[in-house]
Image 1 (cartoon, rainbow, N blue to C red):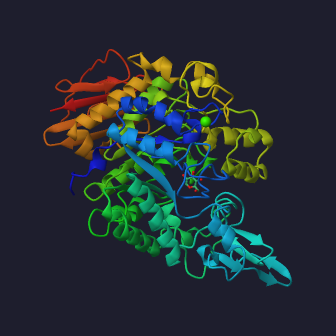
Image 2: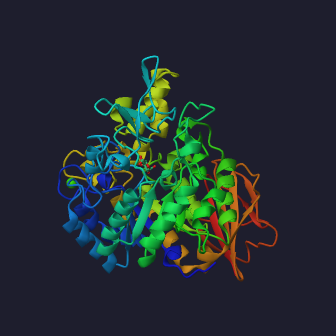
Length: 559
Ligand code: GLC
Ligand code: CA
């Protein structure tokens, strides 16, 4: 495997524009706001930005329902300000990636509006339209699949007497990628942005873009996401991605990362193994985001460090000499990680520990807005106050099983809205995000948790992130070293080592407030190595080990 690819030394900052920074005073984050914060992003050491979708969208799923793939949502700006931002980013040596949603469009996209006009409309076959079935006069959908966001996966259209498929919300009809015209449309869209200077794409639920021919029923019938085996990781996904690669991506110096829910490392390797069959540079894994839940964030279980370590190590080991990891702990789809895997009581300590835990592994780190200052979950008093369509769906399902108070708790804990509250820039009103009331609630902890308060504090989480990003960038052992986990059965400590030539890096992470004795692994001498990172002062070593403090982190380098 070669280490000569630029994305292997990159660090990505992920922006969910609506809640990042409001530049024009209407309460909604926008590209003027992003432009005003480029210095900040650069100061973190990040050298790339990934934007969640900023295209025109009716916002049924906040941008993931796109009504025009070649434009900018008027809430966020226009193509001129986007070009200006792109140029300003490039001047700073930063790459810019857009989110490309190919599995579905908005039902307000002109393709879909055309497609529903008649069965012989040239756009009809852009989507999965299927005739209704009638059994004893009762109308039933074409198959028994269920959507991720809104009940059954089919929505009926009276005029056509047909149903269309939507694996997500009703306003997100699935595109028929088997239709070569649809693939040509996406090649055009990719070229449009790449020609403008965009450096690549994060490809939304890309492992879903092919479906079993004939769209058969799925058995056994599952209570949720029924039909998965018929729309996840089908062989055609690779074919289509190869076609995009050969016809478009190979002609540009660009980067692609695919989002792949419910995909194992073995399956991911089909797409990302370096060599002639590679169709994506990296994959966004999900298994490590399931250490405190079962498959979805809305089916909670107590946090298990064992589950987390197993998932992370699995991707580290399996990809080792074959492919490159995408490393992350937060994005716009998950609750804040300190509230999940760390401790709000030990917010700064656990925030630093978690940061080092994932960022010192092998791969490209992604940092999600607000993660670097330790933003935590919101606790809104009513379920109705959470705007996300999938949150409302989960609440509806849960309310059949649980009392109201338990539903609220579930939502407060698991909602993706937790990651979508306005970025906390300062202790000013509305957290300095806007001069007027923002579109969504600001977390009430903004007076203590904000960028301004952390800028000048050398021990702040923000400054720790800065140090960490630079440490990674400057140390080949972090960039390219081999990964090895120690003591995998330990339920409270995550210990791993990276090694590269004569350099060995030992990362010790405590996931508990308890005091525990840690002994360095054989052959690693803490006395003969240098402690390069940590989250406490005064770090004694006794008999090649130490007693951990709450959520302690220590990183030792031996050369
Ligand atoms: C991806 C996105 C998520 C979106 C879904 C449907 O999982 O990250 O935000 O709701 O796809 O597009
Ligand atoms: Ca605005």
